[in-house]
Amino acid sequence: MSVPRFWRRIHSLYRLEGTKCPKCETLFFPERNRCIKCNADELEPFFYSGYGKVVSYSWVYTPPKGFRSSIPYCLAIIELDEGPRLTSQIVAVDQTEVSIDMPVEFAFRKISSEGEEGVITYGFKFRPKGYPNHKKKT
Image 1: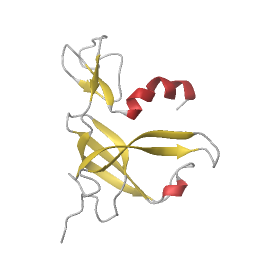
Image 2: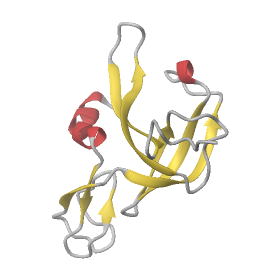
Image 3: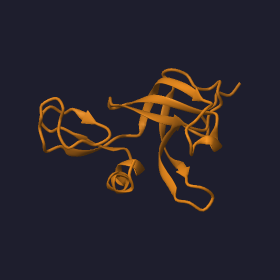
Image 4: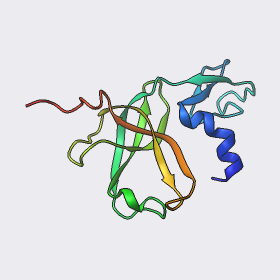
C-alpha cells in the first residue's frame, strides 16, 4: 500500500471503521465510496464492535519480506458480529488453540517495521475474546 493511501485510511486501521449504506443498510469493511448493491454514493461511517469469529485459518511458516520475525503466525478470515469478513492475523494463541468459530476481539498491534530504525506500522489484529483470560482452566 502506498504511503499516501495508507495515511488516508489510517483512521479505519486504528479502529474498525467502515461504511453503511443508508438506502439498503449494507455494511462494508474497509470503507467504500459507493454501495455495490444499490449504487448509492452517500455512505455513512460505521463503527464495528470489534468482535467476531474465526471462519477459516492457516499457520504461515514462509512469510513475505517484513514478516519473518514473527513466524509462525496465524492468518485468519474473521467474520465480524455485524457480518462483513476480513483477513487478519490472530495473536496471543498457540497453534493448538485456534479453531473454527472461535470468538475473537479486535487488538491494536504492530504490523511491521522497516529495519531496526525504520518506520513502524500499526493496525488491527485479532486475539481470543476475553484475552488474557481466554484459556479454559482444567
